[in-house]
Length: 271
Image (cartoon, rainbow, N blue to C red; front, top):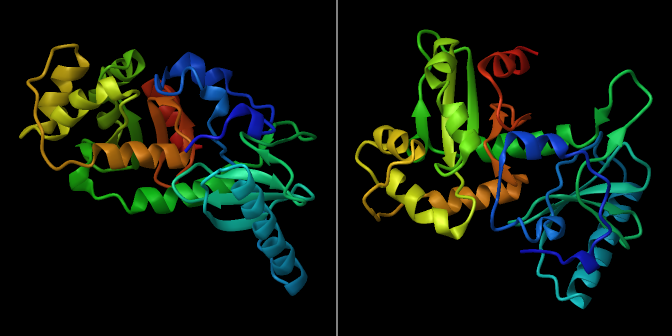
């Protein structure tokens, strides 16, 4: 479900690093600016009747505006944020967004708080909370798992596509990553419809690891079809705001980045 540019008030976002460390979604390249990919949260939940009433009024207002604009979006939850008059809105099958208290504006992207020595991303806590639940619901048999060598110190989830050069670059370091006690759980995220068959072939192979190693090295795979979770995993990524590969998350649902060297990955996991 896409919102057109004319229907959105787009927040300023700092996403330049993604462009340098991840392969973009070819489905979204021409319409990246029109896709809601908020990653945002805030602090505190409504605890009094007045706040709950305000949230319900906002839900009603947003639903009316969606209907008038022919936007098919179902609101699952609304939470207040640390920003006055700004709410975090969870939508079914879509990325979460911010909404102003009057329901007139929807804002995609990150909200950043200034004033400290480091920029604080207001988005992280609520988005990671939602991500953690989504990732926890995944079945390991539906993933492509590279286990840690020795004791498992960390588990990371990586949205990947065999056609993505940065995914290939990350995969080249798999032995080093596993040796550091990091288990990698790949989630299929073909960046365009044209890449869907290759990823489905990987997921339908008897030896999924061998098939992925072959595909990401650029070797063609024989077509294979079966009941597989690739499209569901692609939708999961869309729900979490993924817009390129690789997209790396820790087990708490926190986005760590696009391509990371083993040293960078270890550092982010330990900090």
